Image 1 (cartoon, rainbow, N blue to C red):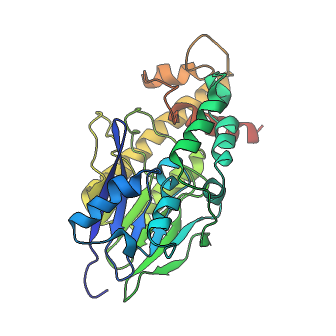
Image 2: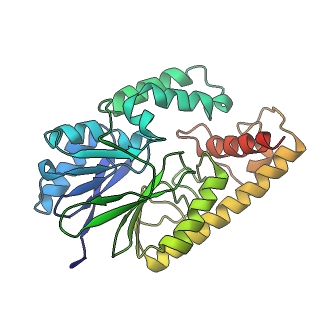
Image 3: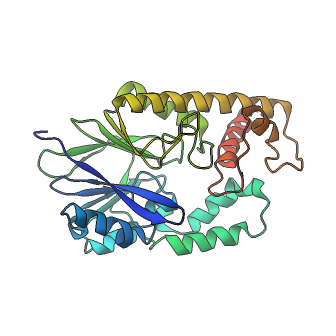
Length: 313
């Protein structure tokens, strides 16, 4: 690469929070992740105009995984490019782009089993209808290992990082190790204070791979994830901060794993606790967050440990 490629965060409003996408200023410009349905018009377009770029010129839409706050704006952004942009996602998460119903099925198969909310299915259905701009077929399906050309000598390599979701990936700008991980690096969680992943072993393996093999010089996070003391990182980390975030992510997973395995070995018991049947985990970790707050990372992660425990029986 002759010259470094500039990366610009694009922040879109969403209630009390901001959603983060990233613009890669390459000959064929790319946007990593798309927020929700309103994000392209309300966040991306004015942010790009402010730096002298046009949303119509985006030629690649790179999705790190299939959750609604990352793919919800994909169809709307694709429309704004005159349907010229290539939309790519890992094959394992592609159903989330193709179908709103896939998000409901994910809820019912995982965290929804523990929340005890008779209106849960209806709420997730309504959320998917409201914040996903359209169902669509991706332009290309990823497996990991691909190289995407953004024109000139700018290439992006794709690295599979299953764990947060089965189809989570990192995009790495080759030659400068700018790494976009979506939610594959959770540290100690975001505002809800708990890291969320569906496959704990794969999540840990992905963190170790990023730490040892990719070694980011610039790490771009999907949300302002938090340190052990609760203070948030920004979404743009330098090399030192990246290694710290990866180390803290591994330490956090280790603590959750130890508590989860102890609870599972002792046997799950239904209680009146909002953390039931994993109340001993919350107690051991000193976790007092609201486990019903979507996307409910507490139950998502604990269900992952339970599924792996059950497979060994």
